[in-house]
Image (tube, rainbow, N blue to C red; front, side, top):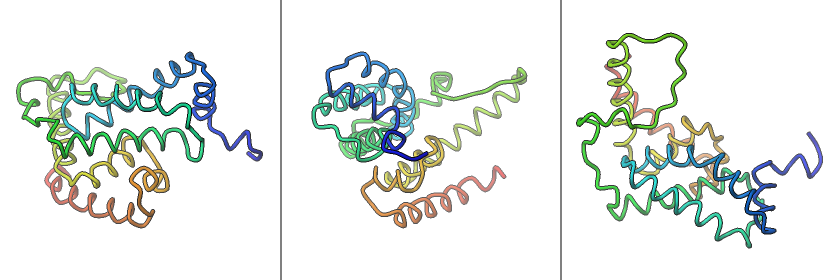
Length: 193
């Protein structure tokens, strides 16, 4: 567990190789994190096309920053700081043009991580999708910073310290954001319990 080599995560090592001009390492980082970044951005902006566009911009910024990159935090913390910044800017600029896309049958294209061990019945699938959509809608109605904190905490499984670095606030502020967000979600989703 000790030593400087152990302190540097594999992604940061890859990024340092990118800094030295290794394009293949950038490809590995892109392949490894693209899906998670798109999922995160989609949950933030609620528009798949905008999420894809923003993800491209995230990785473009990562690549452009290669010469100044320093592994002062986990690579994913740095990556999600860029993604969060772009998502919040897109929301402020009204770039997401939020509509009720979920009502027209596009639920199937929503990014969902599913592990199936037995084929659910059609009714179970419909109930699951309806509940999932209701949770997504409740999360999407949270204030932007609360939404970002919840998505990083629950979906990306980031620690308070990482979320604090991404959002540029203290760990206690993150705990407060999450507490308020989860209280709101509990109230909005109480009927599902």
